[in-house]
Image (cartoon, rainbow, N blue to C red; front, side, top):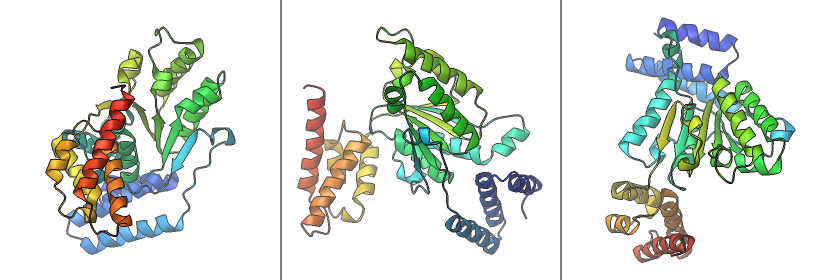
Length: 322
């Protein structure tokens, strides 16, 4: 049977009306029973959880004045297996998930779990997907805060809006993604800095330091070198993403092609995709698959896929002025 701690926390989460924590603990109980050889009981617990998810509408109401700044996704299908990264990177994501799922155990020993994350790296390398994977694995909504709109749409009121966002973070448990974070996180002494942005950054530093919510906060940036140094110590974990290596490119191509792979020379194509991001390779693969569908073929034409990859290379060269 479930451990005494699991039962205690399960009952506590019920009376606290914390559905997310209750579900997480119930899944832990199911896993515990499965390891103990009680397979039928584990299956029945999981079925009850799945049935409950189907019956309950998962809507997080936000104040009207935040509705244009926060995009909410529910029931995300992304899982850790969808994230094509190195084993080291995958291990770091798994550690975040494990600590969240076993946060009560950590708390009982006076420790806290990682819940404030900074994701850095080039565009298209998996930062947003990582946030989606974390939310999907934990059965939490993903709430994306559009920082560029926060600053440009509400100039002069940004700090107040930011406080409202953190109020929502405290009130509604979810994964909150501050996308394009460098819109407010740039170094405060930069020559092009303005007073409003400096005040917003100071407000963010204070709010994230004081935050003691049950939500996960993720900031994503393409330009970590621009970030104010005071930000880094406010995060529990900083994860740096890179362009995929040859092995990762091969895995990504195989995954994205799926049943359309046919006899495509994945190894050769992976070499030709060197220098492209995960997102660029995925878009090129999708274009090749669409070509196969429209031509009524069951697999992609390797020449077409090679051409699509070269088009992505050319677009990248043009963007750099080469």
